[in-house]
Image (cartoon, rainbow, N blue to C red; front, side):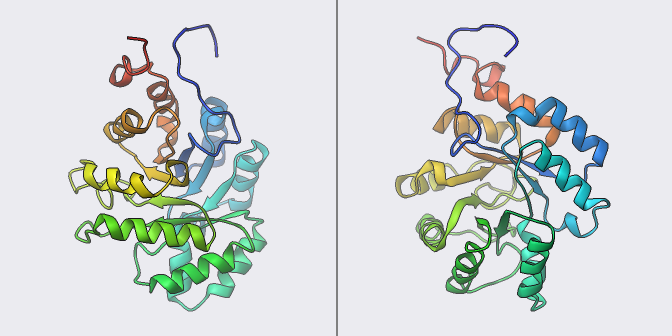
Length: 253
């Protein structure tokens, strides 16, 4: 840090198991990726190339190398897995992961329907090839899951081999664990946390109010995802109680 401040909450150090900031790259250029890392690389733990943007991203290998050279893991969004799967191309997907030297992969079913036992089989197969992050929840705001179902799905996917489970919210933070207004489904989150360890969950929280809510609930070192590259510094100040939204949260009373 640039100077000393007392009463700053403890932040886990990279490589972290908790306190992760997962950033969504929706199409940065190579120069934009480099600029982003110059400013926020120290506070970024993992980068997702959103949904299936990797299919159309120019200079994909060069971009992956930029992130890897900065020591930050990168992976393709779960929608790409779904796009291969629905076309009967799972083995092709695995070859793509190898071809691009991917060490992480996301398995989701937010856009297609997959029997959950079958999804867990895919998690188990891929976990022998890469580190798997799986996503629970639908991108359809009209599909509302009961808390017990979220818990059962998350538990089964962790047991199948997922390193972390992502709680779905879509890019805009208006589905899954949120109402279509962006409001947190507070009762759902409370129930999930009675059964699933906090450090195993990445909560998608693209909106500032959602980030504030989770930090207020679970503390500085909560895992948050779908963070825009331009919002990483802002989020870090929220985590440290250095923005008005959490300014008093970590001060000694």
